[in-house]
Image (cartoon, rainbow, N blue to C red):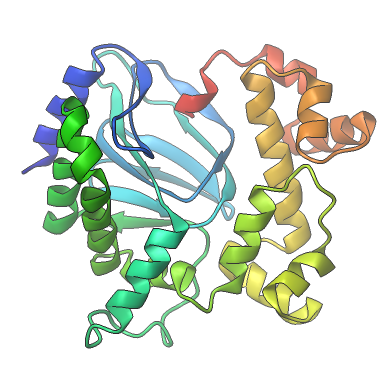
Length: 297
């Protein structure tokens, strides 16, 4: 199996630009030949694998470009900016987005940890910082190719989909992102669990003290460990997560007030002030300037 095989499968399934939900839940194919500048986005736990073109992201104060040589591993919900500024009809962006199931990844991590030390210890490894660009290897390519093969075989996908996803997860744990993924999905990672809860309860009024209590830590310890994991303080993270989610909702057609309330703001005027401070435009101005489908970002 090869990246060219995966590219051919995507070209067959997506002859024109778009985002395609495959027969395997959580696996999407994407293709765009239109430049899309970096814009606010929220990556839920996922793997993004590019087989043609380049994708760009801005996180932790860094601007990175990744292509078919590296895949993105994002094990926690992460606010960032993403786009495809270099996409063109001659060199379209094509790839695969695989959602990471927290329960399945945690169970597999436990199995690996009990299998005679299949992976090196994480104790001396640097802390994860939200997102990692990992080198493709033969095992990852083969597992992804076998997963994408199910795109055109829905009956097979119903039977084999979970097993092929597990095979891909295993390739991630065994590869360049292995230690990074174990830090996120290990049984002791209360920060990951706190972020997972937050990302599904943005419309509530969760405080930092609530998050620390849910993680079983003091506020000071939680703050330190949270910043180690995400490169942001909890307050910065919550604000970025809410604003980026709102920006995506506005780009998708939701009104400014609806988006504000949907992500937990009770004051539309406060939302507008914080949005303009973050992005340099009012929510309405920003929404009017968006021309790209939010899903492709």
